[in-house]
Length: 79
Image 1 (cartoon, rainbow, N blue to C red):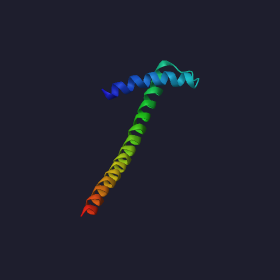
Image 2: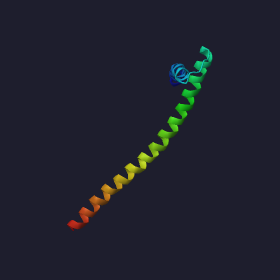
Image 3: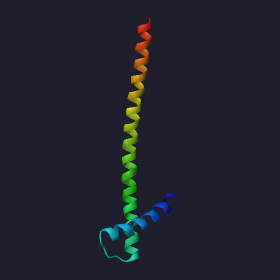
Image 4: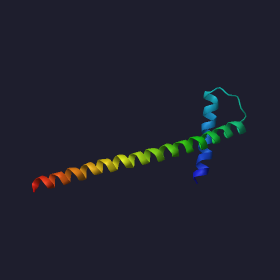
């Protein structure tokens, strides 16, 4: 299903991109440009999300560690 969605979105994106960049191309080339752009953009976005996902996990882990250290210090001060 994801590939079909990518093809449809790519075809529409190709149409808009060729019009915005004022490229005169036949429909097959326009659709091909859009599909290729959607595939490249999809891979770039997946890579960016993977990096940001990893970074988000690290940030969450550090914040979690801060909370645990804060609780640990609060319990140690009570003794």
